[in-house]
Length: 335
Image (cartoon, rainbow, N blue to C red; front, side, top):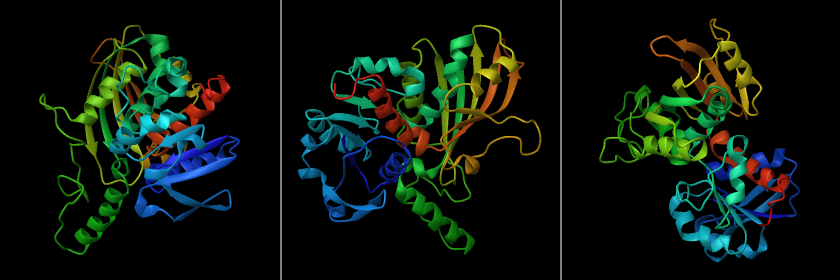
């Protein structure tokens, strides 16, 4: 099996390489692809250096699967060209709401992989991916009616430049020097910014609308969801405070059991000092961690959760590789 990674030098591209190193996928030839400025660079994979190829001239007929991890503009320009020759798994937002492109979290809706029409599969937004993987077992049991979610998202969700700027700003603040933001609308160091992506006419940001629309497409179109997305001065991992209203009554015991037994989820809920998961502890872990599980006594059948996950893994690289694994298991590989 020959595989290409487009955007191999970026955050998600490199994380995809890390995931592939740990997995048992049999890769015959690996092609690392990026913009012309990265051509000739070498990146190690399983102890061997691989040279970076130019995206503009790369021949996708060489590969069976191409992971796109380079942003929406690159996917818009190159994904359909690649899909004429191979299967594309796209991490950008460009194809997510395309009705002819399945939007997949394998543990949640792998059955949608039967709907591949354009030879492209979309990966959801990082905050959506960790949310739906925790919602799925609960929706199956109790039927979710409404969700109110507030996210606390790391700067890595915006790429490497915002990560570098957080470090730079933090040093400037500690040295008592003036801070000028480049990748953020306001100072991010020692701050919280309730604004991710552009604003729509109704006052919601694109990030908030992504969570609403993608959750409906992946899980259930009948679910009502409203979101507030906040950027925090954290390098990696997204956190979410989630309020759920179910159609059916539930018990906390059944909720915890369902979550802990669902692939990709892990309950850490000790109700004691430190008995919960934080972004720092989730970094580098494959699981989505669920804590602070408690009844919302202000509404009927209401539940509160705290969800934490490594956004570069669960929300991007890991999910993309798991899509490829699922395709192979379901004998849809090469369709």
